Image (cartoon, rainbow, N blue to C red; front, side, top):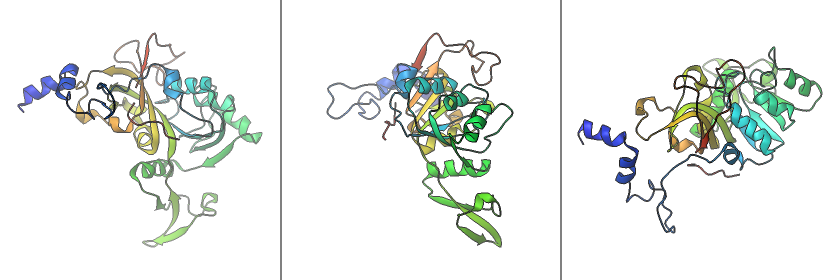
Amino acid sequence: MPEGRHHRRASNDSALDEGNEKHPVLRGQHPEAGSPVLINKVAASLEAAVAGIKDGSTIMIGGFGTAGMPAELIDALIAQGATALTMISNDAGNAETGLAALLKAKRVRKIVCSFPRQSDSWVFDGLYRAGEIALELVPQGTLAERIRAAGAGIGAFFTPTGYGTQLAEGKETRIIDGRPHLLEFALPADVALIKAHRADRWGNLVYRKAARNFGPIMATAARCTIAQVSGIVDLGALDPQTIVTPGFFVGTPLCRSAPNEGQQVGASACGPRPRAARMRVVYTRRLRM
């Protein structure tokens, strides 16, 4: 197909739908269904996006501090009411918003993270000192690799990080090339809550600068990924070379309107987070627990 013609078709949402008209998978048609349904992962609301999360779930939370943290999804999870959760994240939350708010609501029984204590992590500090939350401390590089391994189907791996420290207690060790290593196991999750910059209705995601951090690997390691995004664009509008997380890994991307095209609201904005006037949300992998 000539390049110009391909570009025109890829940038036109209706043209893509027309081109896939007879393809039952791309059209989202169930073999027993009466009429085809377009693949559209946009969910109706924040509440609908997190409705399937159950008590006792293991949930990954994207973000490095507040950069890339899906604050609105976390607020929706608090309102949803799921409890006895195991959280996997880089840290234990900041102040009393986002992940820290979830901890303050006492919905979390255990957290797996690299940096549980910061200058504004008083919520976690108080819960931990009171014995109301369990902590699994994991070096940051090991945490990232355990998550990545889960997404890649790797059951375990050896790393020299942590050898000779308390983190090595009870773990299998091996000498590799004359250097001692620890055996670390993959770290999967039931659900990943992440934040991206833009998505299309098939769930393809692009990220914005440092807000990308743990998002891409968490999306591959969870059985269902729910992504909060700043905007949803037409099919073909995202340059394939910039798509970091293919829609195959995404279950429910959440879109909310941003104040302006260039600003990523929430994670990097200063002051109170503005509430969106409109909220849309997105499906490919069903929530299976």
